[in-house]
Image 1 (cartoon, helix red, strand yellow):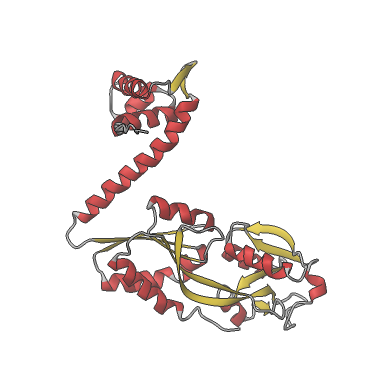
Image 2 (spheres, one colour):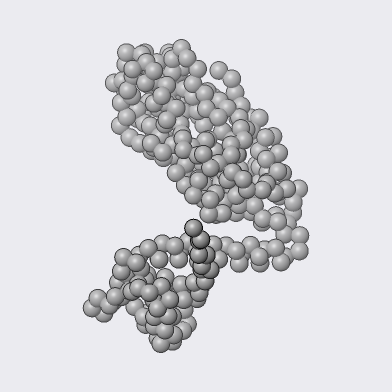
Amino acid sequence: MNTIHTRQIPLDSRQLNAFASLARTGSVTETAQELFLTHSAISHSVRTLENELGCRLLNRVGKRMALTAAGETLLFHAQNGLRSFAQARQTIEEFKQWGRQRLKVGAGDTLSQRLLPAVLARLRKEHPNLLVTARAVRPLEIATCLETGELEIVVGSLPSRASQLDFTPLFDAPLQIVVSSTHRWAARPSAPTKELAKEPCLLPDKSHPTRHLIERYFAADDIVLNGIAEIDSLEVIKEMLRHGFGMSVLPDWVTKDELKAGILAGLSPGRRRLRQSWGLLRLRGRPITSIENSFHVQCMEAAKSFQSAD
């Protein structure tokens, strides 16, 4: 059977931009003012786009323009495309600057505070013209940020569903039960097993890899922790523990300073080991740049202070 190949003509980015703006404002006049175009230019752009696609994208409802079902679908793809175009323009502008290199990195909230600053400072000494974009990123956002190019590399723990990502370990460390130094368990080497299911527990958000490790560990002993709150920041959990909010299960490097100062107390979660790995996450198959290799080397050096043994 012969297959007929048709060449798809890309949609005009200026028309898409006018459409996306109109979908957001709902007003041709406001869109024209926003894009510094005439009223008729906006109307013509959207009408041409509708003619090319062969369907209505917007309907007038009263004095406002509202998206049709087809318009909602196009808007989703248009926003992604326009965002990519903007990133491409920014990248090219950066490359035009002689000697300028760029690195877009992310990390979980705790690592972005404890590891990234030292790593980036050392990296900047090696590469004075380096342009860095750094941001805290939640586990649920990691894959999307890497796929869209918003980030090139992320320091964190491996998400439970990350088949499209490559993971390079940096360090691993034990997790332990953590309570306030005034808690009735504070002087004990381990938590009483019979009380674990009753004690109020602050748990990481369900999307957090640490939460999955915790649940699997205690499920093996038929223990369901008494979760009274789900929090997506390990730093926030730590601060709540300092104020006497029950217990939690956290990596030892997160609470190292508070444990040393006697503000918090750490207890063994049980007889079995409970450890977690952290490392570098990249999109699988994407070429690794020289600046990313330099970043990797600096992360390995900085991670030595996070590595511990149980």
